[in-house]
Image (cartoon, rainbow over all chains, first blue to last red; front, side, top):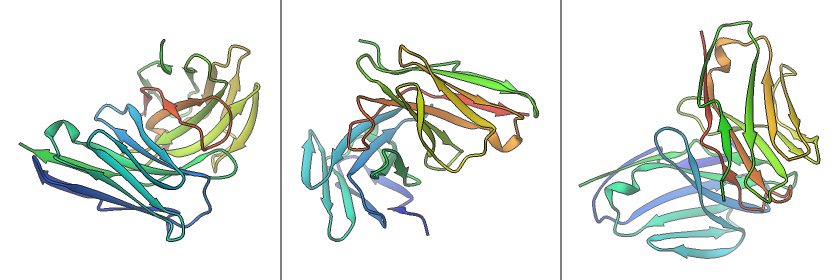
Length: 108
Length: 114
């Protein structure tokens, strides 16, 4: 079993829909990261959180430390949100452990 | 302020050859981590460099080695290339070694081994 599990693996939505991507982890962490990867490979950090909730524009990330679960929400989705969204957890040693990613496609 | 840069962008090598990939961290960052991302998979941690020393290493063979220079830039070397080494190689920089620091990623080097 992978230490970081994401669901769903693939997600297709219509423009304007509310989107939720889930991440569960099985290790102790110091922080959880949500990352966005566009075709071609570049990765951009969206959020880093260790408790509670963060909001940035149409993106919201939450984490429940007790349940070892985090969610990434996108409100009013747009085709430019199409990308792979990756959850990664940071351990005490300094490295990140990544999930396999969720491929999101938003149709106009 | 330039972000993280990597070179080359793409590389094609033959089995058995050796390759060197380069990474320059974001200005002000002193820690560089390297990751391998196979097609359709999440990145896998290779190693992390801080103060010119390897601090942490993932589950990769000794064929994978690295170096960090006094200006904090870093190299990843892979010897005796295998077909399975074909992947996107990403470097990320942070100010400090903790995983609770925001990571800045480079665009990656896509390595193809034939």
